[in-house]
Image 1: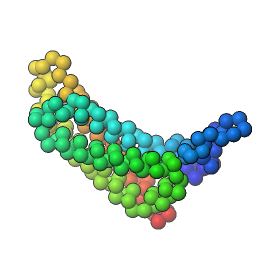
Image 2: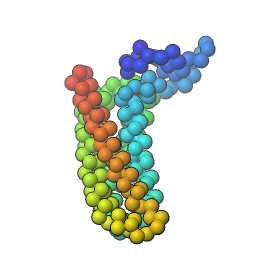
Image 3: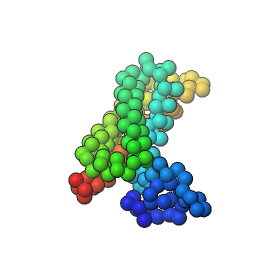
Image 4: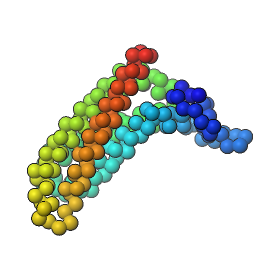
Length: 178
C-alpha cells in the first residue's frame, strides 16, 4: 500500500507499472495520480483548461458586451491553471516534492485564493452573461456565446468547489505533518 492510500496489482510503490517481470514508466508516480488528491488536482487542471478554451473561443469576440467579467475570469483561470499544472507535474514526478510542498502553507493559501477567485469571477460572469448575452441569444439564431459563457461560469463554480476541497485536505495535511 502506498503513502497515498492506493492498492493495486499494477502500480508499484517505487513508481512505474509492473508488466510481467519488469517495471516501465518508473519516473511517473502513478500512486499519486490515482489518489484523491491527484484526482482533485487533475480535475482542477482540466476544468481550468476547459474554461480557458471556452473563454478564448466564444468570449473574446464578445468582450465588448461582456466587459470586465471576461477579463477577470481569464485572469483567474490563467493563474489557477498555471499553478495547478505545475503542482500536478511536480507531484507526478516526485513524491518528495509532494511531501515538501503539501506540508507547507503554500497549498492552503493557493487553494483558498483560487477558490475565492473562481467564486467571484463566476458570479461576475454569471451576471454579465444573463444581463448582456441572454438578450442577444433570444434574438440571434446560432448565438453560441451565451451557452458557452453559461457553461464557463458553472464550471467556475465546480472549480471553486474543487479548490475548496483541496484547501481542506491541504489544511489537514499541514496540521498532521507541519
